[in-house]
Image (cartoon, rainbow, N blue to C red; front, side):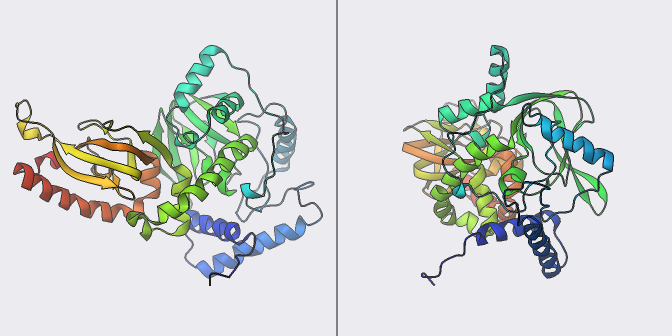
Length: 396
């Protein structure tokens, strides 16, 4: 089997099908597969004379809402506008059915850079909004600066649709202010499945996997967003993530917790990973603080320390070491699973590097691992009873 060569394009083809299955959850996988690949085949045949999508763009393997002649004409006019002034209102009509493969791109340093001028105040606001976005964490400083240059401000009003389920992906958005509902169509009924509250980002999956938007995002109040156009996102973020995939995919497969996930699910986790380095003795997590991310040790070691709440204020209430985590082991999940403050403090032992997943990605991508993490809670309780005579620290 080691000599078998994977045909070019097979991974992207199967990945696109997998994403559509996870998004649509069809009852008959075989019938859905026939329809999905038939649409791709028809698109490729229609697109044969102009492989680079010149002329009428090919449809992807998704269902789009039928547009009136008037809306089609408006979209054609907007297609012209997008070249010079990309914005939220300059929607792309369609994209090629073929998945974007960053490994196929040649050096594109000759491509013109998109720059949207900003005042010093705007740039400071933008940098503050982007500082915790994990997709940007692995960028070099020069790349990050280029991303900031290309981003543009979008002011939104209540009930305004930022993106609509089923549409092609045009921009990636970072939230500066505002609350946004995440709405998904299920059996013809709109269901609010979550919300973004004055922070976070959305729109990356459609750009990464060349799929239609999986949900509708609606502003519930006035707010401010920062958009990044598709071309810049591909050139800087997706290509950088491709390098990160090659670096981390083998490591992720070795993490016991993640072995139960499908390959496509593990690859999505790699896409949202951030990496952080810590010096010897540096505190990574503080007991009692609210939780915002989950950690996997890539190299080095960490120690987990707990101060008992039942001895709060007492002189002998020093931290007690309850565990250590090394390469491939994880920590920080307890507060995210129980929706409670951090139950322990965590310190680096020697030079340590951790991979980080933020709370939004944790909830979205690690659902299949939740039962495993919940089972671990009972082990933590046993440890606390042995140390302090009570497990109250996990229950309050």
